[in-house]
Image (cartoon, rainbow, N blue to C red; front, side):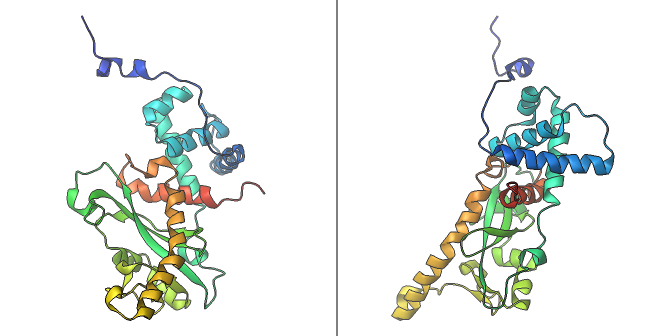
Length: 268
């Protein structure tokens, strides 16, 4: 009798732990573990099967490598449910350290400029098809907005909204347009944000049919806006955000948690 290796009966037998490397600094794992330690002290948490360092490492493996909770549990010697709880708790702790919009814009003065852009976090949750399907990207996912410095350093990531949400609609809903207008911060954005307001600068349509100075404006605009893609490139080095298998309601928390990891000063 031949038994297929893909049957449910042998699924757990295939989950064999093995040594591996994680491409994050050791100091970052320690920094997250200290945040968890403070969280446990505040909650007067009793004994846990994993210490703070191992819980931090568990979460970073999940984010960086997009391993399932079954795989994580097998690797760390805990159950699938316990792995889920530990990761969920760590994500909430990290997300609580992410700046809100007005904090992110603190220090920017009139005349400074930022880059605003949107991206799609692909997801395999397609039951509610219409709200999550992006016609622009031709796939299901969640829309996330970013405000970045001129060099591409992310200042703020928004919560996630259904993939079909237009970038301008999303920017208005998150308060980006009003916040930048109030502070008179110049914003460089793509054509999706046309009509946002006086402080937004977007490329001209049909610029090849316009005078040369219109074409030069578009070239300069594209050059200055290009570093904004670095913010999303950094975000998606964490493989979980290349194709999320979690609930769409958790993607916003994951993005905020990763933002904390990208910007935290763990060398101090």
